[in-house]
Image 1 (cartoon, one colour):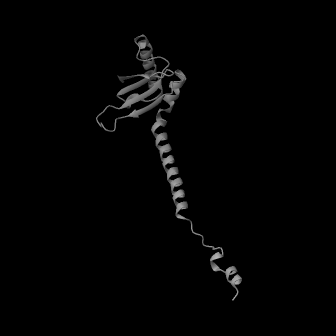
Image 2: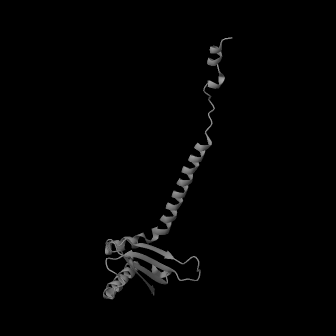
Image 3: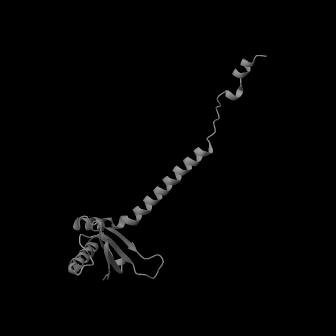
Length: 151
């Protein structure tokens, strides 16, 4: 009996044509698929949620550069009887809480309401909620919210 021949002809050393994918590989594939599905779902939701208000956001940016506006509309989900509200959140270059800036705050709100009327159908909304915030460097954020009933 030749030991060298037995080692060379060991059937366990031959490559197999039916390779199995390990469970770790399946887990990685599942994680990538899950992440892709979640990212796609979030993108579609956000697109549908913000698309109707994009023209108004662009008009606000054109009127108030560096305002970083975000516009949303609807009711509070927890309060079905709450009024339909158009919400605008935007940055301003002044402190909205200082009394000397009261005229600036009112003129900003007036202009936002005018732009909203031009770029969006306000007939379905009862309230305009504008949230102004100012972020001075290395200081606390100053913010103010104003609600107006829409005609």
